[in-house]
Amino acid sequence: MILVTAWVLLSTLSWSQNQAIESSSVQLVRNATVVITYAGHKILVDPMLMPKGSYESIVGVEKNPLVELPLPKEEITKGVDLILVTHTHFDHFDEVASKSLNKQLPLFHQPADQDFFKKAGFVNAQTLQSHTTWKNISVDRTEAQHGSGVILEKMGKTSGFILRAKNQPTIYIIGDGIWTEGIKANLEKYKPDYVIANTGGAAIPGFEKTPIIMDIEQTITLLKSSGKAKVIAVHMEALDHCHTKRAELRQKADSLNISNEKLLIPQDGQIISLK
Image (tube, rainbow, N blue to C red; front, top):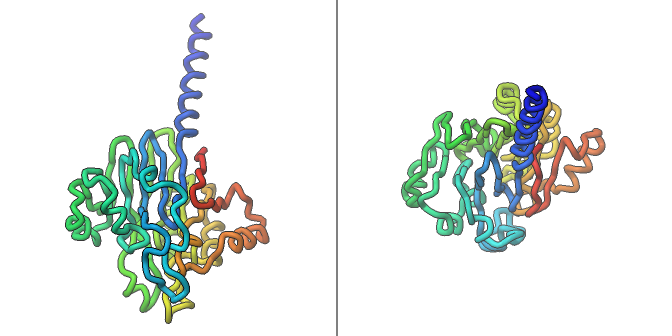
């Protein structure tokens, strides 16, 4: 009887742990805006919520964003428990997000953006130097390099985040950054299960050969260095200075026998279950 009871208890615990992992997900909204359901909380990352064509063209092609939100703004912001902002360029935190989100919500940001969020009136905004624990989630801030050479000075500071929690996959949000030894070191240190990478190959006029986020070549390097992690590729086909298309990235990955399970390329609005 005792053995049967113990077996039932272990089975129940195992089922509960699996259910916790199954409940985690990443939904690409648009560009770098994602909703992460994690450890029982809804986390909104880099909200750009403006309608299509609200912002000037960056390279003289078309006003940004290039596409509409795939779901109503109210659905995106409803029930948010925590906001993570990698940096405050318009395509990662815009005026619509600032006006739409509850100013009482906890919000983690990099040191460079402290004054920005103070002026925006987010009373529970917290400058994350390196590490904090929020509720039942461990959050680490990592550095990202938004380009190289002269253009890096113009782009300013950017960051990423590592999310960890009991019975949950470890998630590495790289943020706006090119491939660097720093990212490689983070992969080796944190050994994430999932990496959310901005892979649009964006470039600024006059510096077209100097990407400010990972392009196809750098994304392949990331994939080859990512160990067990699955890479979720975002920040594509929403801004006119992003040159990488989803189909081109998939074609290159296919040519190198990188599977759909290793490299996930979601469409806007698509939800990926984390296992």
